[in-house]
Amino acid sequence: MAIEEGKKAPAFTLENEKDEKVRLADLAGKWVILYFYPEDDTPGCTIEARDFTSDLKALTKLGATVIGCSPDSVESHRKFINKYKLRISLLSDPSHKMMSRYDAWGEKNMYGKISQGVIRSTVLIDPKGKVVKHWRRVKAKGHAQAVQKFLEDIQSGESA
Image (cartoon, rainbow, N blue to C red; front, top):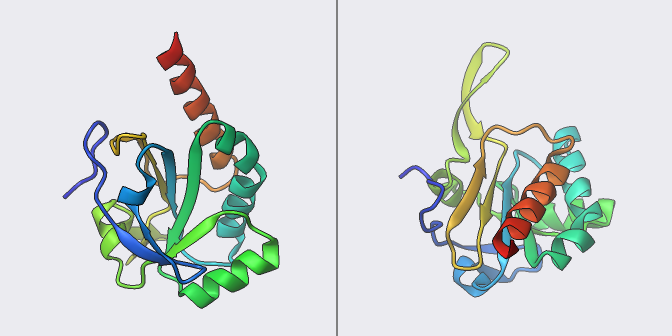
């Protein structure tokens, strides 16, 4: 099942860094920025997590919740959050089931080598649970700011 803009976002229930079950259904009524990244404490993933943390105040004012997701363990997420003082929640998907449903797990080509892995991407889900935007194969640097700008633009368009 490919993720499609304008369609309902696939349901999920995964554990976060606090050993809490996080369900998409529990986030109804909020904008959800769900971003997928390959691995805790690696250069690109650290940039992206720190940028979303830096922009969290502005994103929260826009009614958004930011959630990252990788195959790393809950314990790995805790260490990553503590090391960089991150203020976002991170979900653990070691089976890749949720990432597959969001087109964030699949074939990658790194320097000519084909492998299966996490495809760095982001999905913006509206308060009604529909996919508004799917950024595929993003670059970490500057991405959080681009998501914030998109959310600001769409919300100002809604109120116009």
